[in-house]
Length: 107
Image 1 (cartoon, rainbow, N blue to C red):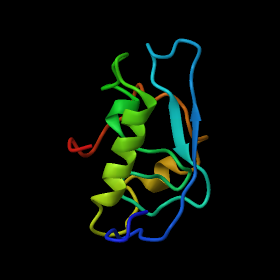
Image 2 (spheres, one colour):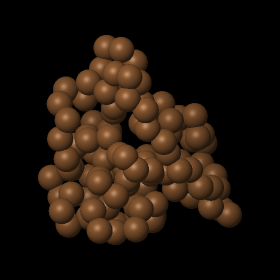
Image 3 (cartoon, rainbow, N blue to C red):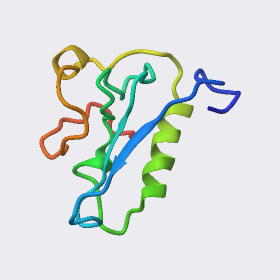
């Protein structure tokens, strides 16, 4: 991560899987352990990012997803967990986000 962020010098890994109907459906993207402590990243690795769900469009690319993830991490002001982490953290990561409620319209 860049020097001027709260995650400076930290490294994280993502798992990216493309469904058979990609690009009609978004890729499955989640963090492997250890996950960053971020208000949009659940401790199971899932990323609460609307373009991985309801806002996905077939013209989007994997590079756009990577840029969006970097943007939310670089823009973070503090390390905190999502407000509903306790309810979500036990889920298997990487499932479709069709029925997710996004708590922040800015990402």
